Amino acid sequence: MSRILVLYGTTDGHTAKVARSLAETLRCQGAVVVVHDARSVDCTPDDYDGVIVAASVRGGRYQKAVWGWVRSHRAVLNTKPTAFVSVCLGVLQRDAKVDRTLETIRQRFLDETGWHPTVTKLVAGALLYRRYNFFLRWFMKRIVAKAGGDTDTTRDYEYTDWKDLRAFAEQFGHMVAGQPIAIPAARAPI
Image (cartoon, rainbow, N blue to C red; front, top):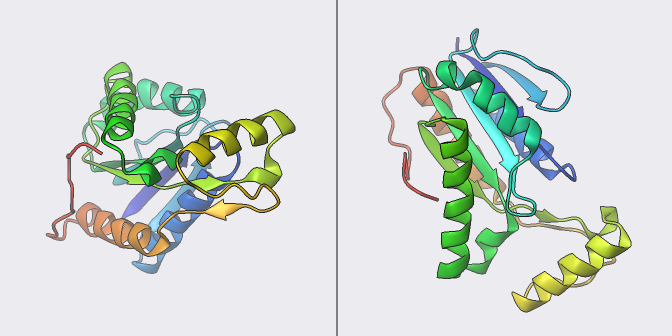
């Protein structure tokens, strides 16, 4: 039975939901899964067979707590199966310039921390207008309008492809358990 750590960083709560979905899928495969918020607990990856780190992009960076945790534990992370799940709304734009920017953000994080995840996954996030303060709601609406997205600020929007995320978690679980399976886009840029 594999032991897997899912560590996440979240700003508005959606990446926590992504982490819980990953954990639920892995548990259905029989793995023992522990989920931690990078801000609240400093756990170690030593006792786990595999680790998934999920973080969201805000202002061109990932959460500081995730950055610090990964940097502190990079030596251990680089010795076992790991996955980095990057949660971002920018993926919805399907624009080459935006894709390059997201790749730069992801690569800068990996370069600065010294971590070389076995696989990375880009996941569309959520627009949580009702949780934002006035200024952030106005700012996000402006950005989303330019991209042709949803601008009704009286409701929230989830863009995560949950089926695809579950398939990714299943494949990662098989990899950690040592079962041969091809993970799409393994070590490929997002």
